[in-house]
Length: 191
Length: 113
Image 1 (cartoon, rainbow over the protein chains, first blue to last red):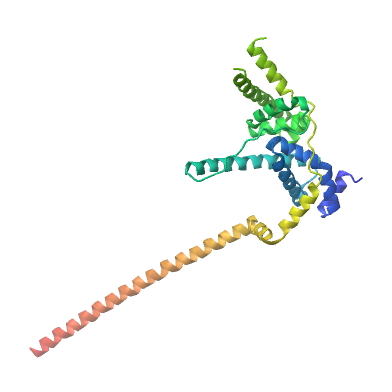
Image 2 (cartoon, one colour):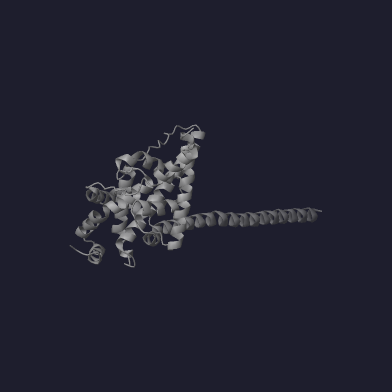
């Protein structure tokens, strides 16, 4: 089996086999990270393809200062957040169109259930994912990387190019915000 | 258990619902799909579009358009000034011709007298 440095060098030379190995080795990492952020399986698959195409095109800019997985997490997170931003813009534009009387399909918000959640936790996890959706971008990224990918705060800080204390602060604020959201949700459902 | 305590319990359990979550697996044909997309991108309009979308090309086109506009505006403005100058000159000439003819008319009358 080829090691990471070899694979990167081969990919820089345009080796298709090296590219295939990289995709197969890291596709679940990329897909799961994106899925946690965008909460839609079809979109996550398209975006995972985008990420690997970017990897193929930009591999020459990879200096090897960090691990390949850190670089992949970074591209996956950025791609997913960019996608959410553009979706939000389209939604806003759709709202304006509906105000002007033009017919627009309403965006259906589906309850996302992560395929890796155990059966007895599915309902609660769906509620939690709805709350995660309301988090600001950087908190969402940190929370997803830590909770879904199991990265340590140090690893998250490398992916987000920030300090460990900044990640601690992001996680603390994310937890506070989630508690607030969940409190509102359960208050509504317990009346 | 009070309602508030029950809600707090629900919140804690919900926050823990992602503990031990398994990693979602990607489509096993992901590489094949990526290859197909890359080949599609290489052909036809997508190739042309990616060429046009390059910042260098976009900047060059922008400079060219601005240049053409500048030349067009310059050409429109300059002849107007030149025409005005010619017209003024013609007016002066006409005026002088009139004056000249008026002078000769006066001379004629004076000579006749």
